[in-house]
Image (cartoon, rainbow over all chains, first blue to last red; front, side, top):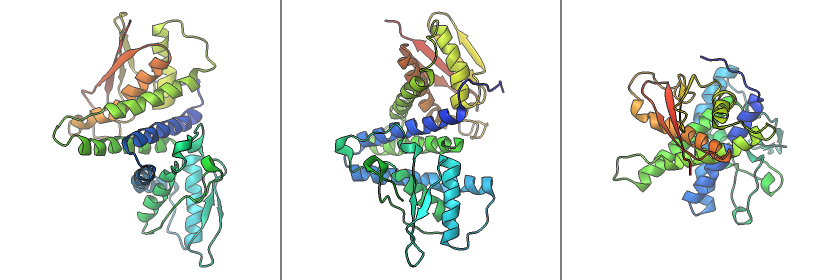
Length: 159
Length: 159
């Protein structure tokens, strides 16, 4: 293998590459499907497929063990966010029964450089993240639902 | 900042999505339509190159641009440089990568050789898009004879 030297900040380039590729993919899906709800659903499905594989990568890299409760799980997902997206979400809004909570992302690399046009305001652009969480947790025997409460592209972002 | 493996996951989902669409659209034909995959790559390349080169001096000529693609650009995106660049000085360039990022994870035998075009189509688009934004109109095709090495043929259109 030849030398891998570059004058660019590889991490930054990689991050932008993910953002731009994802943007191009969303644009393509919007072209393919007419209904914005269908687009959001399709994005969630793609995320689910990614989650199924991503959990394996996560377990291999971190070597973490079994979670004791959902608080533990929330912690691990937080770690995963930091590992894969490089952002640290805050865990908030625990329900009284302790079976529901939100992640609050202050910044989201997926939506860097993104602006939604007026007619696509109904699109859940980051729905792929919900899918990833669902897919990944399903592979560790946790059946969860994940949805977007607020969106930065429409102000504020929560899962 | 997104992690590197995320791009791999995203890429395989894009390939997967494209295959699903193909199955719905052209059930009867056996030929795979990789044009959407290529187009997603094109839009990505078109945008990423603009962000990479914004603070660089103008390239001397076509060959200089190609050299940039083979070294800096390739290492930033594909983690290694192109192993061999050949040209006939009349607008045909052949870029050879002996360990192409998206093919190294597949078996190096002949078993999946038929599936290889799916994994290089996106990159053909990325090259075409990048060069298009640098004012070089071209056709890019790929050729995989032995996994995981890959040859990209670039044919510059001069008119």
